[in-house]
Length: 329
Image 1 (cartoon, rainbow, N blue to C red):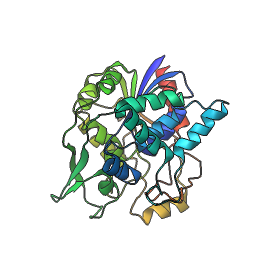
Image 2 (image 1 turned 90 degrees about the horizontal axis):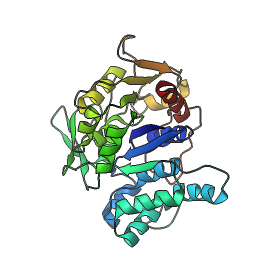
Image 3 (image 1 turned 90 degrees about the vertical axis):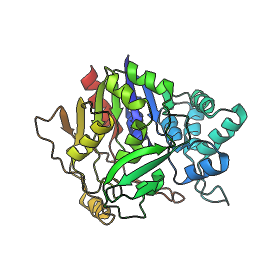
Image 4 (image 1 turned 60 degrees about the vertical axis):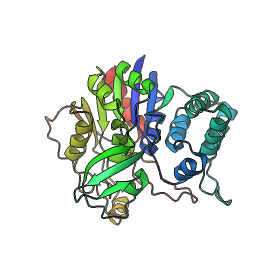
């Protein structure tokens, strides 16, 4: 059985895991622990624990989707978002469940592991660190912005280029995450927001070194759209350059690039937010670039109690997983 490690967070990793679990893979999902927006801010400020939304999404994605009604109900419960109620509007049941379990067990890492057992997940969800840190971005004009949410949804000029990111205070990698990377057959980076979902994991002490040293194939799925505040004006080669920089300049083995046509009406909506399709400027002989239809045709419906910005164009996890299966077998 091939050992697959995913690195990321958010919807991109959620969709990828939905696809990967349909194959005979040993899956380890390494998840960012620096989110600071939405309900995660409440989790951090009021419960004093690390953010749980990305962990929750990965746990739900890996849950067995068989004909067991109780498992189906549990998946729905963990994704349920409260639409009303003072203090809990916008919160998810899954986040509150893990906060309660952490209080009962006295350890958040143990609570995450036990939640995986309760949901009967296929694989493992591994927090990248157990350190309480915030992401910091330094921009080309010297501006410093603290917090993943403030980078992702900027109050400053979102056209500014990020010069570097780091965690404050610095954090040490979860040993389980390092071991999973070293022992993997393939490490999948993305899809997801370049800095706030992906590179935020690589600046955890020990993760980039593990990626540099592993014999696994490193696969990166390039973003479909740019992101105002993170990657305004970025081309595909810009994304690749940043990923390889934070991998301590190890070269990617494969680059997945969507070649399917994007819906014009959706593109116009993105343009209103200063986001644009990522230009494919990778040469035909540039590493192993795999161009294919990786686009999801699923209609995106946003929960009315969800106050965060969400993407309207997404990758299809099953299409990516199928390509990975072909590469490895």
